[in-house]
Image (cartoon, rainbow, N blue to C red; front, side, top):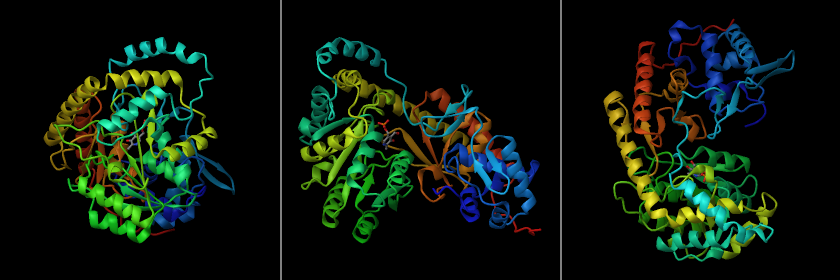
Amino acid sequence: MASQVRGAQLARLLGQWHALPGRRRSPDYAALAGAVRGLLADGRLPLGVRLPAERDLAEALRISRTTVTAAYRELRDSGHLSSRRGAGSWTRLPGTHRVAPNGLWIPLDDRDMIDLGVAALAAPPELLPAAQAATEDLPRYLGGAGYHPTGIIELREAVAQGYTDRGLPTSPDQIMVTNGTQHALDLVLRLALAPGGGVLVESPSYPNALAALAARRARITTHGLAADATGWDADLMLGSLRQVRPRVAYLIPDFQNPTGHLMAAELRERLVTTAHAVGTDLVIDESFVDLPLDGTTLPPPTASFDRHSRVVSIGGMSKPFWGGLRIGWIRASAPQVQRLAAARVGVDMSSPVLDQLVAVHLLAAAPGIVAARRTQLAAQRDALLDALADRLPEWRVTVPRGGVTLWAELDGPISSALARATEEVGVRLAPGPRFGLDGTLERFLRLPFTLPAADLVEAVGRIAAVRYDLDRTGLPRWREPSVIA
Ligand SMILES: Cc1ncc(COP(=O)(O)O)c(C=O)c1O
C-alpha cells in the first residue's frame, strides 16, 4: 500500500464499520476510531501511513467532518495516530503492542487470549530427544565452516526420499533447504518474478504469501475458490491462465489454506499442461501435504505431471512438526537449485546446521509423529465442528479432509466486526478479508483446529455470545447518508 491512503480507499477498507457490537450505545466517532484500530491490529492498514484529510474521509463515509475530527482525536489519545499541524496524521501503535507470529499487532499482555489467528500446532514430544540427538551429531560438522547454501546433505537426502516415497523420484541435488516455507517462497519469487510481474493466486489464500507477493510488487490476478467442497473451477482457472498468462501461479493444492480444499489429480495434470503451454511457472505450496485426515488418499504430487521444469514445489516442517524449527525446502530441477543457492548467498547464506540435524532426526521418526498429529487434528477438528453446530448452527462449514483449518461461511458480512468484538472477550480471530486482496470475504472466517479441543469449544462459546450480541445491537446495514455540515 502507498504511504498515503485516500478517503475512498479507507472507506472501502472500513467496510461496515458502524456494525460493531454495542454500536447503539457508543457514538459514531468512537465506532469509527475502533474500526481504524481494528484495521491496524489485523495488518490491513499499515503503520506509518498518512490517513486522509478529515474532509476527504467525511465525504467518502458520508458523515459529518466533526465525527471524523473526534475519531482522529480519540486515535491520537490512544496512541494510534500522530499528527502534525498542517501536515497530516500518520498511523502508529501504542508502545504497549508487539507483533505476533501471524503479523498481527497484539497487546503485550495477552496471556489469557485464545489465539485462533495462528494455524500451527505446539511441538510434539519427540522434539526434545531429536534436539539432543542432533547435538551429538554436531561434532561431525564442526571441522568445516558450516555454510551449506543448499542444506546439509543428510537433510537433502531425507527430504528427497520423502518425495520419492510419494511417487515423485527426486535426487538430493533437486532439494534446497530453507528457513521455513515462507523463506522458500520468497527465494523462489526473487528468481522467478521480476518486480511488477504477473501472478495468479487463489482467493482466499495464505496472507503471508500475499505479503511476499506484495513485496515483489506483483500484479495479482485471483482465482476465486468455491466455498463448498468443489474448490477450484477448472475451466475458470485454466481460462485465467490462458488469458492473463501470468509469469507465476502460486497455488496450495493440498488442503489449501484457508479452505482445506484438495485438488483432484485430473486438474493437477491439466494445470501443469496449461501452465507449460502459456509459459507460467507453478509454485506449489505443499505445507499441509502430510496431514490428510479420515484416511483421505492423496492425489499424485502436482510436480509428478511436470516434464519441463515448470513446477517448483515448496514445503517444510512447520505444520506436521513445529514452526519454531524454521526448516523448509524447495524441490526444483538441479540447475534451478544452483541458481537459488547463488541468489541465497545475497540473502542469508544458509540454514543453521544444528536445526537441520534436528530435522533429520524428526524425519527419521516421521511416520509415528505424523500419525499422532493426524489423530490429534481429526479429534480437534471434530470438537470444533460439534461446537459450531451446537452454538452457531447458521454458519456453513465444509468438513476439511486434511490440513489444520476450516473456512466458515457466516450468516452475514460480519467477519471484521466479529473479530474486533471477540478481541474484547479474549478470542483472537483472523477475519476473512485478511485472506484476500480487496477487502471482500467479509462473509467468511478461518478457524484453525490446532489448539486443544477444550480451548476450541470455549472459543466458539465466546464467539457465539458476541455474535448474538451483534444481533441485539442491530445487524450490519448501510447507513443513510447524513448531511455534511
Ligand atoms: C500455505 C502456507 N505456506 C507457508 C506457510 C509458512 O510456513 P513456514 O512456517 O514453514 O514458513 C504457512 C504457514 O501457515 C502456510 O499455511
